Length: 458
Image (cartoon, rainbow, N blue to C red; front, side):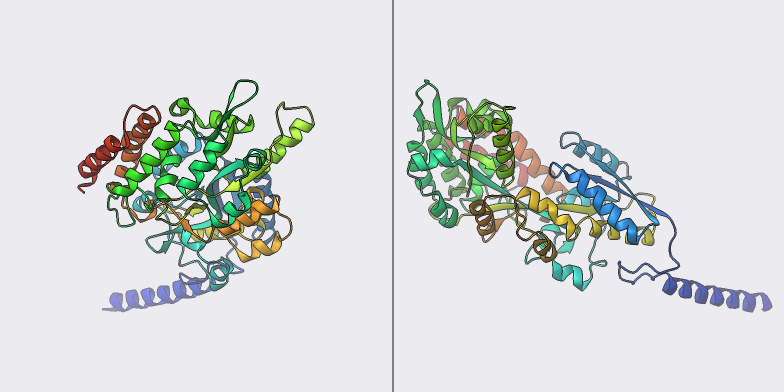
């Protein structure tokens, strides 16, 4: 009996002590920004990023240096991965249960289903939420829950050569403001397709046959959000996809696009635009404004040979019976725990780093990429410091009024996996066959229906 009473008293005192320590150290429910004075235990947060823009590593170094002035006990180890090899390296680490604490990427349902992605709602203070511009935080959500802090809201657009557009009498400013339909684009593209004095061809449009973005952007501007809708239902089985295929087929038959389009890679597509052999290029990010401006400087310096180009950011043409849409992809940092969980305080420390890499000064990424800012503080800090041509910056802002995004964030692992299989095994070869004239739009539309029913049961 005495032993029982002693044990009870010991447990009670232990609980009081633990409770007091929890309050002292910030506790389980303390805001993420609160690190108690006595909680200065050394900690290390691992960050894997990508070269978001040319000088992004410089940005990271400065942001970490600023962070360590306030939190010197939290060491930040960062690595800038290559776009080519980084995704594979991350997948290996994730499958092994040892991902970095922070990873630069768009949010993915696959990450959530591993059980290692950390939900951020518990860390988001009212001040952080209020700092994000309307709709921007949503780019980091999975089924309504926050899993990422967006750093940029990347746009997929088309782009034009200002000289060629104006020589053809194209009112590109009106197009930037009002958009253009498929038929309007087709008529304009025909005017810009011609044989040049040296015997070479100037095409109205250049794209490549190895990427999925061209057919996806066309379908999205026919009213189809993706191969699947937000609920995982297969929707590439109606007249809208047939109309999309017919539009692409018409551009090929009219000679607006080169016959060898199916064999072109993205680099060749871009080179055609640089060489003024294509009036319009798909796809073109707002960052092209900076890239081409730098190329023009190299031409002036004698480092590169070629014609200087004035770049015009353009919306993707849309179906006559569907509104124009701009595809937007939010990219930023996603937070993970490891199989050997390092604990709650480590998660709080990781979020502090995450916020430091996503705050006002981090807005330099959007500024460099000529993208609309995701946070109010970023817009304020970089006001008047933009690098894009004024008309392109205003166009990028205008395109944000009507956007669409990937449905993958709403899909479970099975649907997400099947979606990727459909894109690689069905969509890509079908569009290449369309470019080559080997299959008709009607034939491909029927194949889509059959494969969709087989893979998704619909």
